[in-house]
Image (cartoon, rainbow, N blue to C red; front, side, top):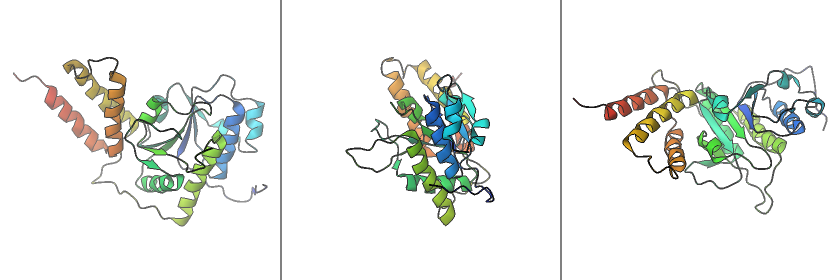
Length: 253
């Protein structure tokens, strides 16, 4: 469908699109085309396959290759999301986690509200063959699930990016999202701040023996992190929680 008009001022900004373990350059290229259709211009790749950037990658962007020029590459998901404050994970598989699940339209409205309060947003997409791992999903405050034919809900990467990007773009046009105003000069905590809290808490829990059963430790850690990611903590609340952990674990003379 033709529709390119270089005389128009392009929409830009929006959530960062985070593609994890991307395998084929064509998949990245078509995802970039979908991003630019919806005014999204920040792409982050986590551990992409060697040689992902090639002629096919550029060709399949259909003219949106400027996004590729400023794409950032990260070794781990943790590094890719450290500066983000609101993260949504796309998945079609049930997860053994207590996280809210939204349709793309519901998620887009929440993202617009988060943007209005100054939060930086990211959307996680896993590789087409396997999707996101549980550890990747742990970073997210919510899951985005596309309601489709239950007998055939499979989407390729570009389709998933386009569906969610479209809802983001439309939510901006109708200006319906309510803003979660910053509370008393605070701001939403970044992932880096949350991870510092997690490491602090988990270190103390290791020291007291709470996480002593090694085969259960990964699942327990994920559950603990999910409690806090659902809470939508501010930077001040994270600081308070770290103070509480320190206070509870200090030795009394």
